[in-house]
Amino acid sequence: MEHRETEIKLKLDAPIARVAARLRSLGATLHQPRHFEDNIILDDSRGRLRRGGSLLRVRLTPAGSILTFKGPRRIIGGAKTRVEIETDVSDGALLLRILDRVGMKCTFRYQKLRTVYRRAPILITLDETPIGNYLEMEGPVGRITRFAGRLGFERGRFITATYHELFLSYRKTHHVKSKDMVFGIERRKGGSMPIGISMGEKTRVSSRRGFRAMSTRRPSSR
Image 1 (cartoon, one colour):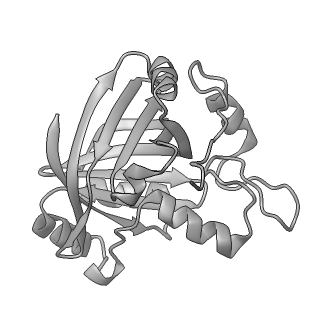
Image 2: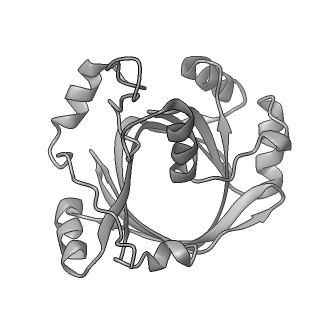
């Protein structure tokens, strides 16, 4: 499926349960229950997709996998918009092996626990990530702006950065060792407390089929 994606992120300070209750009070209904996602961003050795402002991603979830291409982005009305092409994949792990064989390597990996709501025509996701909780909204920019206002967010709080960009900023500020945004990342200083998810839950999601640890390989500097 190909369409033009228009979306924003909002950083959440309130507990996820409180935000979910507020969404329901405004008429949003549960679209997908809370689930684990493992996202693999790929590029060639020269980083041509990244340099062109595009992105290739394989998303692994307990329900299946999705291959997504995103084109260069523009900012319109405070929201990020870009062409998105995606398709379901029956075997995400096998797809990653095929892409590796043709020179597409993992350049960034990020994980989250996602709950999806819908209030037509807006798709709303609550993301619990290793760097904090975020709300994403996708839909017409005018409807996004109005609904965000009902949640108490002005346009000045809209975030158009990717999770990779948010993580790079967080990593520098919080002295994180990991180059990937995965559950259990540790700070360079202050001990070994994992960020963002309990060790029990980390063990449960890590043991699921298809979520084996993957090494992240960076593009060469050529």
